[in-house]
Amino acid sequence: MKTFTSIKQIGDLQQAFAKARYIKQNPFADQAIGHNRTLLLIFFNSSLRTRLSTQKAALNLGMNTIVLDINQGAWKLETEHGVVMDGDKPEHLSEAIPVMGCYCDIIGVRSFARLENRDYDYAEVILNQFIRYSGKPVISMEAATRHPLQTFADLITIEEYKQVERPKIVMTWAPHPKALPQAVPNSFAEGIGMTGYEFVITHPRGYELDPAFTAGATIEYDQNKAFEGAHFIYAKNWSAYSGENYGKVLSADRSWTVDSAKMALTDNAWFMHCLPVRRNMIVTDEVIESPRSLVIPEAANRVVSAQTVLKDILSDMDK
Ligand code: CP
Image (cartoon, rainbow, N blue to C red):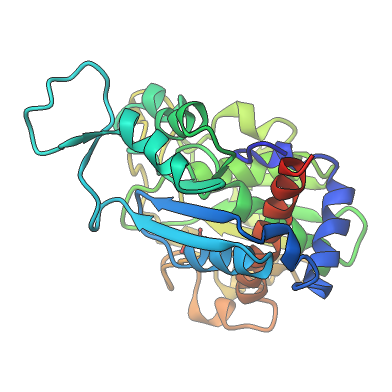
């Protein structure tokens, strides 16, 4: 593996699960592979889980880590080409990226969608510049359109908790006060598409995701109907993808909040969310605190996910 920007780059899913299981049972078995290697984590946006779990994964592999929050302590970066830099941004990304590449062996980048221009966001301008100009393997720690480390952790969690061979997975939109990117739902849909599981996406009309990610999924606008017989409920908010509504909040309908009455429609489903989560907007206290809530094991699997990916990249660097 040279870069990890999409769950599709994980390769054969069953082999990836086997690698993840080994890492979970033997977290310190591969300390030598990262010796004298440095992982640089670049954050353009806030993080708790990705920041900590990716560092922990690197430490488990014997790596050193450096973390840089671009908006706290670094020079403000110009990201557009051809501009006269007479404003408040003294450094251009075109120099900053190769410089960062001089100080590490692998780079992780978090750069969210700006939700102003769909073409710009879906071109993954920032992430692709790191891939092109850093000279180092790049892992996405959530970019504009995907969050593959989260998706792999989600798939590992489903693999661990599923009680039937082909579970019914329901990804449901839920209300949120702010406009959020589509990266997590896009990526989750892409990942579930690799499993062959039954997959239903439910959301109010107008929240259709990019069909490039949702191929094979059933879209159901009636949330109650979607929940019937589900084995996993994956809740997430996202803003509109389509046309001139791109990046907009179209609904604040609190009847979409996941509560115990809705969970009762399922086949005793597990509840999942990538976190952070707005309680009593996305999900009620009762559901997230119930014994069927997987949000903590799901977050714990972020270390396993990142360690599996980093180990693969380190192994390929040694070839
Ligand atoms: N799920 C997730 O990526 O969490 P953070 O935004 O806290 O990293």
